[in-house]
Length: 425
Image 1: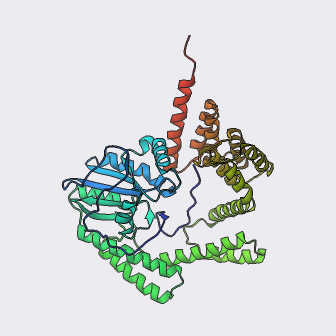
Image 2 (image 1 turned 90 degrees about the horizontal axis):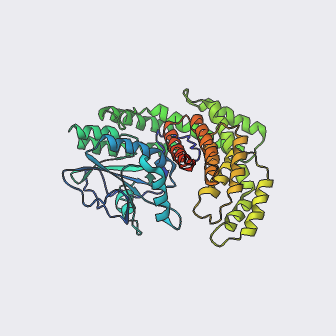
Image 3 (image 1 turned 90 degrees about the vertical axis):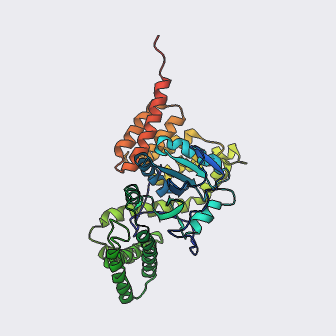
């Protein structure tokens, strides 16, 4: 597990890929379900006219997708008359099928709905995502009577829409208007981020506020406020300049001025000092990674498909001799050795030592680092120690969705520990 670092204007994060002009909109007939493989659950054929469907697009590399999967499962368990389908798109790596299969197996009951993979010619990505001008995942499509009636982030309005559908109160025309309004909001935010004329932006923003009231919320439950949106964009811009100065090691006076500007632009509800602390950690991590990039790349090559075990051992010692103190770098190195599909020779001893160093550097307070160390212990056969460490990871985690994933891993380790116990004489 890795940290999720978010400083965003939108309430919901997404992994952006690309966009194009939309030709598929709310109210249109849903494209076909043309997939290469059903990874979990029975195959779903054509859309039945008397059935409601959620078709959600995701990928194993997408952090926000991982966060939304347990929530989708909760909805699938609640709305039992709806068919939920997760379609893997834009997957990365050479052996995509193995990557997806392992991911779904690891998710277990947390991913309890139909799961499929896109075709080699990316039919689903093209006919659904790109056709609807959706360049970010996760994205869900709600289909009823063969027509698309809602499009959006699965944690941003899908549940409310399903409630309305179930109660027979869903308003397709309003949904269509909301879809178009959301595009206007996106264009507004894009112009603002590019430094558009403030007076013109405020005028446009007020028009969007009026539209928000007319529709009962462009995004229900999240009132649109133009001034707040513009303040958030200014804050993000100031934070980007501040971050760039830190990365470039600008003089202290310059950094202090940029920090002051960012602090002044921060919305009242923002805990600036907490963000500053995380930003400094991220910058330190980026510097370590940049400084040692060549060494890390050589090690990755040495443990790869056509690698050299002798060279890998030597390079591994060089990495240890760096005596790294950045917990995130140590965590990423250990996690890569333990899980990356491109790694063909896994040095569990090195991964364990790096993970332990990460735990020490983070004073045992980082759940992601503890989770990695527990994985290293488990893969090394130290199951009881892995259980103890995973319990600490669960205790250190305050994010409920991430905690559920950690607890699922803990159950796996505990089950293995039970099997490993000697039988009674």
